[in-house]
Amino acid sequence: MRFDLRLFGTTGDGVACQADIVVYATGVKDMQQQTDAAARTAAWMASAPPGDPIPEGSHITIERVEKLE
Image 1 (cartoon, rainbow, N blue to C red):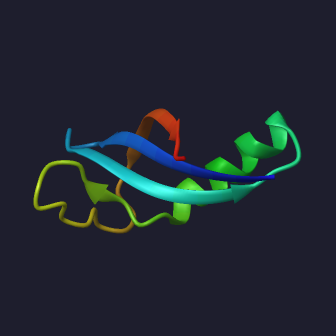
Image 2: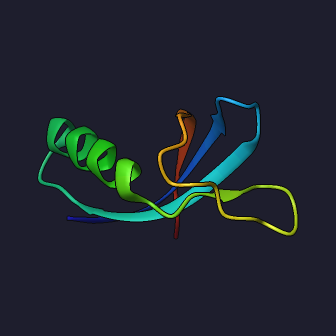
């Protein structure tokens, strides 16, 4: 199944950020693994305008995940 997800997190510097990803999974465990892998390579952006990109290699803690419609 295909899942369109929006990840919300915070960088090590305390900047709120988000990323949109797509994962294909067959079960819950597979979805968790695919989401983790996609989060590592996602294009993270600051949540506050103007939405500056988060530098590659930044430490990001994922706080929540939302399913996009």
